[in-house]
Image 1 (cartoon, rainbow, N blue to C red):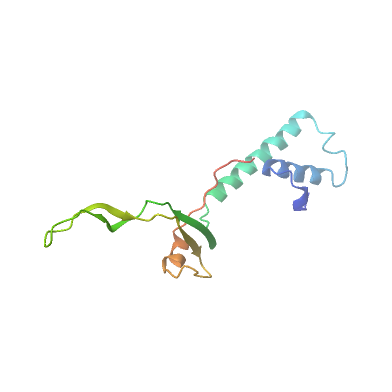
Image 2: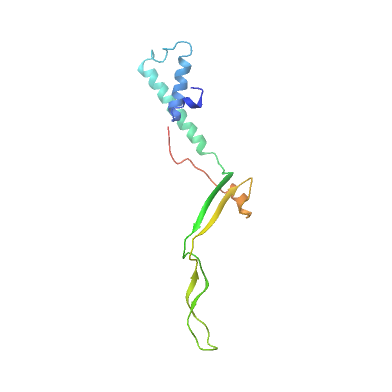
Length: 140
């Protein structure tokens, strides 16, 4: 089981296979010769190991050190001074009927990085310390 390629995908299954491999090191039938209670003890022990490993990992603070993403500002999302105005008499104040809006989508680059700054903002590097990653799914 020592190779990553042999992983079963679930940490508990991998831990159980490691225990079986150790039992079968001298006698390849050692695990199969165990009684049901002993096999259940191995199952319970490896489940508890998986729970402990997950709990340990959840307590760790992970940081994204390099991430790039794209963003999009949809048409009509930005309103600025300008746009259509009502006709007025000479010398009368101009009143705006509608503010001007962006008519095309605006693409933007979003980046969090410890090693580069393609955006050119100081927050790119500072946000590395503010980003938190959590385990959202139990796979054991």
